[in-house]
Amino acid sequence: MKIDVDKKGFAIENALPPVATILLVAKDVARYEWAITTMRQERYKVIETDSVPSAHAVLQEGIDLIVLDHSAEGEEGIRFVCAMRERGVSTPVVFVSDKTKEADIEAGFKCGGDDYLKKPFSVKELMYRIKAILRRTHVAQCEKLKVRDIVMDFNARRVFVHHTEALLTRLEFKLLEIFLKNKNKVLERDYLLESIWCDNRSTQKRTINVTINRLKKKIDPFNEKNYIIPVRGLGYKFQ
Image (cartoon, rainbow, N blue to C red; front, side, top):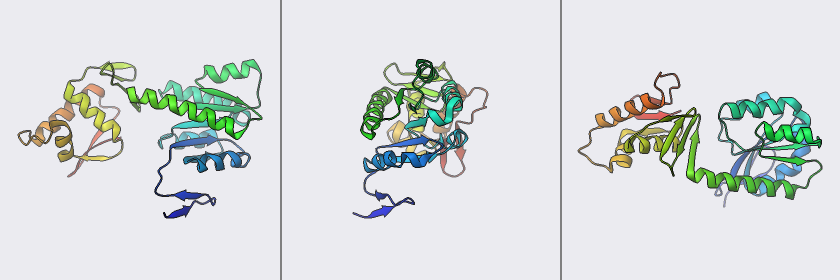
């Protein structure tokens, strides 16, 4: 098995994909080296940032969970999580803090935090909490899919765009599911033809274009979001 080493000297096994991606937000990241090492040993990808503005910049990179040092970030961290939740971002957040007053803990949960870990804490305890939250998140994601401000509820077969329901046909629902599960990937028309119409050659590629345009109007009636864009000569992409 080929072993690579990242810029900080941690071994990376290329054959094993990361279990999940964790964003660590802390002004003094060096204090978390012991925790970061453990996360990477357990195959978590860790992205480190030393400020809330930097966290905003990487939030779109497929983050599965955020560990936020509330001690250092203070009210800025609270505002960061509040803003996330207002935008419909449901990424779980674990606050780590030496602020142990009931009002501080309440503020962390009220703004949308999923857990609040008091300092000092053991690495084992942090990992137990991370794994528990990701396990619950995985179960919920099996029933729902959320990308940007679009939520697909597979059990109820309903779609909500910024909390407003979009009424889709069976084909439109399946088409949107494929786009959301392949965010930022170019999907060729032949691939969509095979995936949705089971490679029915009587279905013309023009039919795909018509269906996509109809879907776009339902999830973005004012053409402001540009969810689905054409890629000339290839197909379409959800961004």
